[in-house]
Length: 94
Image: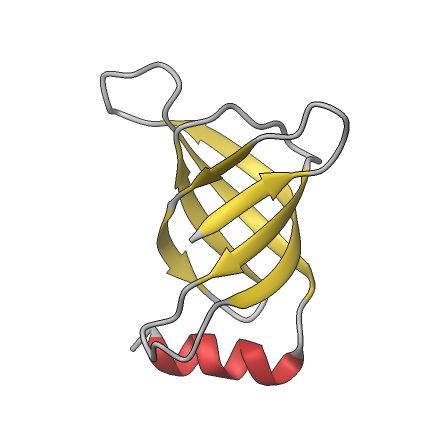
């Protein structure tokens, strides 16, 4: 999946989803983000029907056990996503 922060100094990168629910997604990130940051997300579900676009807000972060100090996990709360796309994500996650 691809994510991008909003603002003047926006950051764009890719990530791996660790888990997903109706309300949000947990991501493993290699870029530093802060609680409260707004992210634009393009999530690639397993159904291969194209990415799902969403807007989310970072609600928590935690350091990773990986050797790089820039690695972190983050909880992203969905703020905007088409409801039918939520169902598609959940179905393709199982």
